Image 1 (cartoon, rainbow, N blue to C red):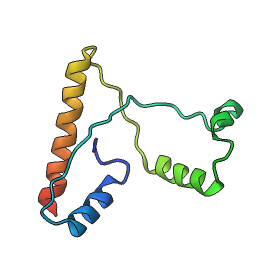
Image 2 (spheres, one colour):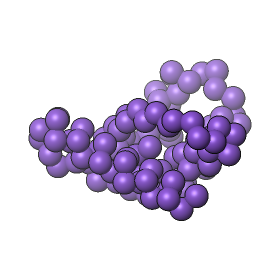
Image 3 (cartoon, one colour):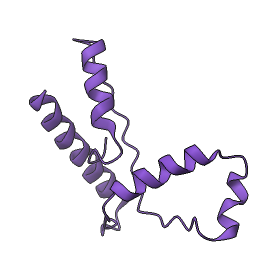
Image 4 (cartoon, rainbow, N blue to C red):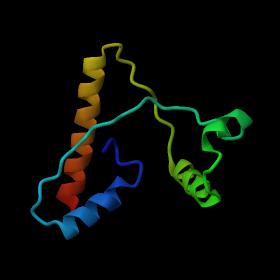
Length: 98
């Protein structure tokens, strides 16, 4: 869930609507921010077959994003705990507003 910055709120609202009373499983996958050098030719070596509409979707998502600082914690366990806590807070806030 992270901080809900990839459109997950819409997915969750649909899930709640279509599956009322069902459990929601969380899988926390948080990555440090990455620079996507999509204007550099070598970047596209892995995406030669990507349709233009998929790239347009990526650009829309990127344009809506906000810069995030990487975690300063050198301890991977503490970082993971921090990521889980952020995800739980965000999800609880979304569910209580629904």
